[in-house]
Length: 114
Image (cartoon, rainbow, N blue to C red):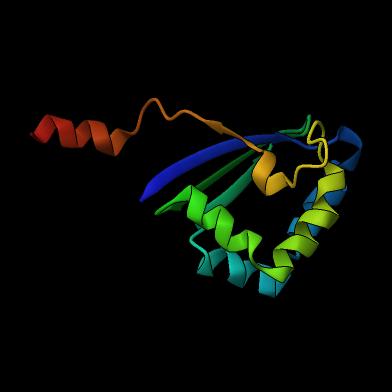
């Protein structure tokens, strides 16, 4: 399972709307995420709109492709895209910046036991 962390920037004047929409994510969207490999998925939002996402997945590319093939994702991305800065028409689930993982406690502990 791969751990993926990513960032996006929510427009400051749209932060409350972003939070409101995520308090009531469509049930078919939630199911589609799970079924296409988005596991242990969380979003964290800083007061200035910096959004950090985390998920675990066998393959980010396959998880993204799986969602791209769903009708519900097309609707969700179309509605959410306007809330982000600097995407230039790219859907948010394809336009995020993946961050490099530089430390993971369990990996370090496992290395001590070898």
